[in-house]
Picture: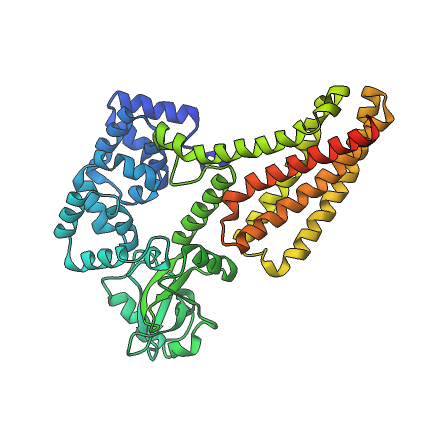
Length: 454
């Protein structure tokens, strides 16, 4: 049997076209047969790429047996956009089925009337958990955590813990660790579920507690939480209050979403896409959000133009310089962007700090120098073959070498300086690096041309 039979790509054109065809013909039986093995994430993806007409048809079809996880798998911005299209009963059912953190992420998107209506119709316990979750600041461990947590007293033995788990009717839908607390609910440590299963019943659970049990305060930024998960290879982590009392837990599946969101945010910032904009926003709002970045780039371009203007006599006497100038600027900009991207990622991963700034910048300077040597030699021969001018070839060669070095320097040191100043390097670095490499490139090239060629 082919491997593809086990890994059906639900976005293959033939499959997607069959799906749309059945949807338009209202062939519910065939349609349900097509998607019966779909993961909620795949159904969510379909909802996001379908037009409004087809989306409403699919929502209607799924209404009877709707999996609440589908709502969680939708991008928050998209869910907020279509929340009014979804039947109130579906939303209520999802809130009742999901863990508190997931339910809260849906509740916060509802308008005041629907939010109050759902909260008034669910159990008092569930309402309390959701309201508590929403009381924490956005992008913190408190907002990220789920209140449903498996906790036992640290003086339990393995047998007592297993019996407790079997009898409990309120376990989280997914959990990986058992959280140990004392009589005052203070967090004592964690024991992986696999460790519980593999030990004898009489073994004291406190004796198999995981070493160096990490926990995070409810106010910890979600990006820092993700960094702890990444460095310690955790499956879950305890969330505590000021007194060290256990409030809830964060699972790795929630952190994966955070890592994805943070990475997406940094990529968009590097491209000048800042603010709370996304693929589903209206044209006007996206235009406004991108205006500031474009405006600052325009100002930067005028700075570079000012440098060129000061050498207009040189350019008038040797017009070929105008044709060659973009090479210097482009290569310097490319070098700066490469270093900038590496530096911003390293800063986000906490690998690049002020303490190792000089070493990291020095490394990039060497890389810029080595690339500069190679490309300056290459550009010398190309220019010489093209224009048959030794001095012109030397000018472009030297200029290219220096600008590649400066590009590597600016691309690394600018984001470090901005981070030191408390400015997000992903947002501001691009404009500074582009401006500096253009100005330095044009200045070096035109200065050398004025001195040696005119």
